[in-house]
Amino acid sequence: MHTYRQTLKYEVARDLINRRIAIITDQLEDEEAKPNPDAALIDQLEELMAEVGASTSDLDVTDEAGLDASIEANRTTW
Image (tube, rainbow, N blue to C red):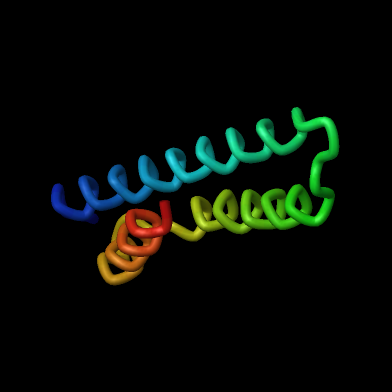
């Protein structure tokens, strides 16, 4: 069983991950729309998108330390 506090942290962590994915998506779209897109940057952004997306499945509502780490990582990177 998990606590209400853990549930809130889980939801915040997921929201921050989703926001970060949206930002990366915007960056990808902007780069791809350029007349001469930077293929290396596109590859980096796609790799980052995959990493961030995978972190969603790593979230565990009962792992407060993990949730705190995810919140911190995704709050400060954009």
